[in-house]
Image 1 (cartoon, helix red, strand yellow):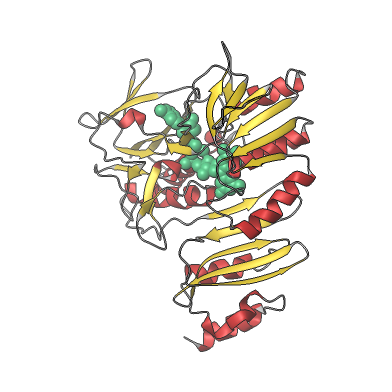
Image 2 (spheres, rainbow, N blue to C red; image 1 turned 60 degrees about the vertical axis):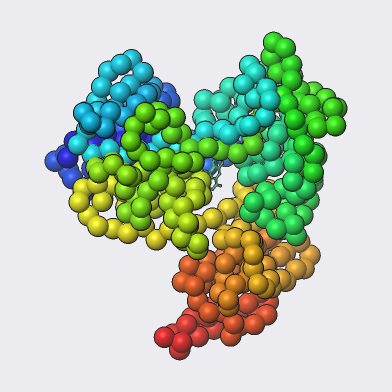
Length: 409
Ligand SMILES: Cc1cc2nc3c(=O)[nH]c(=O)nc-3n(C[C@H](O)[C@H](O)[C@H](O)COP(=O)(O)OP(=O)(O)OC[C@H]3O[C@@H](n4cnc5c(N)ncnc54)[C@H](O)[C@@H]3O)c2cc1C
């Protein structure tokens, strides 16, 4: 097949790799709007903290050459011409395809006045991160205001304090990572952040980015203005779908896909942050914009494009905090449990969220060794009532879980 892949992020490069492996006589053109080899945004903070390239260029910088992928950088797709089966680039050139994988990922979503002012940074791409860290290295930035207390804001704060910057996070919700951490787990993360020197302004609404001609501060809802050398928006992400607006490919927040990762147009599939796939728990379409979903959706999408009939089991929420010094993992949901089991001692925490006797979410801090077991039980929708409170006790025995699971078969 003559295939085109839009995007060389984790989803795009995984899809391109799968296409090459399953269809060695076909051809794959992989397009990226950026000037870099395929990289993983997950490793941005690690890369700038340690100087390590291996985690950033996670498939190796020469991945395209090694796999025979025709990788084209700084190639921005402006439209998909479904009738003629071509992608249209910003220089008006066209690339024909028989099969198309859309893996264009996500971009900053900042519905705040002034977010388009010159100088407002985000931490979504290698280009932005390079500019931002460059200012610190050149001694031009000693203070930073980060608007947004989700994973990206928290990760960036740890990178910047690591580089010696005076960092404040402004967050509307009263605890960090409110969509994935419960208040007790967040309290452990917040202590880790404060111990490292991050200032937390939580429960505080930022109403505008301000400054002229360049941004130099943030106006809060009470009218107060805070100023800093670096002003960064980390308010959320949105699927990159603007270039599909004139195409018949159905999009809402992201691209609608079925459980085969197929879009509404035959021969066009989507994967990663751009795809609205079914949530494993609710079955409803949702974008869980995380790495594991991107790299598990992509092979399914690519194989099905070639005529396979693989089913994607559903996207899940799973987050971990890196660089905090305390391991923290959160999975599933904390929404509408009918019971919550908790165990907490000296900076360690385990909380399991239950509905109808099954695990719908779990939070671990300090000691995260049970994370894999909870995840496995959660995804299997195993009935865990037999464990009672034992599920969160320190002596929770994995052997018991396995033997109980075998007995209950
Ligand atoms: C700082 C940070 C930390 C993160 N930490 C974690 C973590 O700890 N764990 C976790 O699971 N997830 C984490 N994530 C999320 C994770 O990085 C994403 O879920 C993952 O990168 C999604 O991969 P993707 O390929 O779908 O999209 P992306 O990585 O966004 O890649 C999109 C690709 O599409 C290209 N593109 C976009 N538009 C066009 C166009 N019009 N034309 C051509 N090319 C285009 C881009 O150039 C890029 O190559 C983090 C993200 C960030 C930013």
